[in-house]
Length: 160
Image (cartoon, rainbow, N blue to C red; front, side):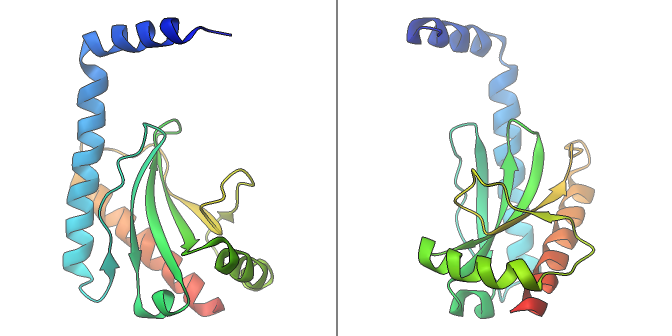
């Protein structure tokens, strides 16, 4: 097992290159723009602040009135290790999550590829929104994510 000092030394060495900070800043800056754009396009959605994370995931959540009334929300999540955007259905607490997980397990029929990673207690259902996103074309990337969110919401709403 690597010592804590060795881990921190490796981390510090990576920071000296400057690429790590720039990439992280770019990801968080994009999430901020995406959050603003989705808030503008969908004024009836309640949108949370951005959770920066610990370089594992960064996200913000959105909720329609219908989802909120059920204790549910969706999250637009950037998974740093995968380099992908995912869309998650989440709940306000574990009890609500269990209840809707059992309902949705039998009701979802969709062209979306939905999954649930067992080691992810924060999501009821997940789907890949964008695999290997093109951050050089942020306008198109925002449109693709918006379309994915809308399709995900339609799928969930049809089952609830």
